[in-house]
Length: 393
Image (cartoon, rainbow, N blue to C red):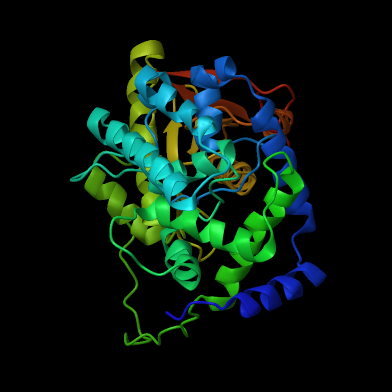
C-alpha cells in the first residue's frame, strides 16, 4: 500500500474539516474523554469502574466494538494485577521521541494481553480469544493522546500502512502510535487537555479508513433458487424442547437472523440462568417452539416456565437496538402463547450485565422485568408498570 504524502494528507484533512457528518458523535466523544480524565484512580480500580471501562455505558460513549469482539470474563474486573496494569495507561508519556513512546505503549499493551491470556479472562474455546480491540479501546479512553479508537483489525490494516512504513520490531499498537505521530507532525499536534480536538482527530482516522477501505461487490450465490423447506420440529402446538440437537433444528427452522457468535453467547447465558433459577427457585425453564397463525410456521423463544407462566428473552448485549428488539419479541411471544394456553405470561429480559439507567427505566415501564448476571448468580428488577396488551405483572 502506497504511503500518503504530506500534501495529500493535508488535502484530505481540509476536505474533512469543511464538512464531516459526525458532529453529534464528536460532542459525545469529547464529553466522554473529559469524564475519563476526571475519573479518580480509586473509582476506576473498582469492579464496577473496570466493567464500564471495558464495555462503556451511555455516559462514556467512545464507540462500540461490535458483538463479534471476544467478551471479557467477570473475573477480569477484580484482577488487581490487571487493574493496576490498565491504570498505568494514564501515565504514558505525552511528548518526547515517537519511537520511545511507541515502545512504552506496546510494552504496556503486551503486558495486558499476557495477563488476560494467562488468567483466562478472554472468551473460552479451543484457543482463548484475547479481546484485542477492547484493549486498544482502553488506550483510546485513558490516553487519547497516544491512541485513537481505530480498534478494529481491518481498520488498522487499512489506515496504518497509509501513514507509516512496515518495520520489524514494532507491534500493533506501536505502529498505531507512530501513525498518530505522523498525522500530528503534518497537521499539527493537539494538547492532551483539548478533548474536542482529540475527538475530532480520532474521527479523522475513521475518515481515512472510509476513503481507502476496499469495497467488494456482493458475491452472487451459486446455490439453486429452489430450496427444500425444512421439516418443522413439532406440530401445531406449544412444544417444549428437551435437547440441544432439537434446539438447533428448531432454530434453523425459525430462520432467526442473528450472528452465530451472538446467538452462542445468548445460549450460554440462558443455560447458566436456567441452572441457577432451578436451584434458587425450583422454576423449570426451557426453550419452546410456539406455533403462530397463518403460514408463518413456528417461532422460538429462549426460555419459558409453564408453572409460573413466565417468558424470558435473552440478549448478548445491552445496546439500545438489542433491548428494543427483545421487548418486541416478548410481546409477540406472549400474544402467541395466549392464543394456545389462554394464559397471560409475565415478561422478562435476560442480559449479561445491568442495563443503563434510561434503558432499564424504559423496559420496566413497558411492564417487562429484567434479569442480569452478577458473578455466579443473577439479579432481578420487577416491572414498575403493567405491561401493554393486557398482560399481567
